[in-house]
Image (cartoon, rainbow, N blue to C red; front, side, top):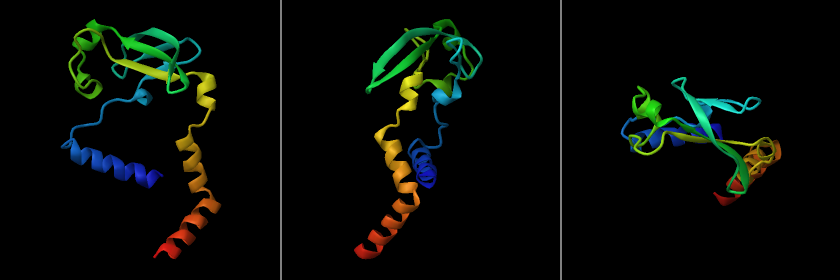
Length: 128
């Protein structure tokens, strides 16, 4: 799966004509104990929702202050379009949602297991 992700990133860069990828939630500094969040530029964000339901999981959502996002030097890497009404929004899975594995994660673990690799190898030989 790691090889797939690096290849996928290469294809994405080719499509985007070399533009750097946008920040993801991993690039933001979320403190679960204090329920606070800072953007990659170091600006505080305000919590705009707790236990927000999305794709059968619960999230805590944060939003950047418009005044900060409008003048941010990292805006090109953070937002697709310049901010007009709201700043950057980001969400983090809540504790109980983080413990649940998605079907994709379960499948990755199954394929990467010794049994899964052996089965893929055998089926690959049969299909050739």
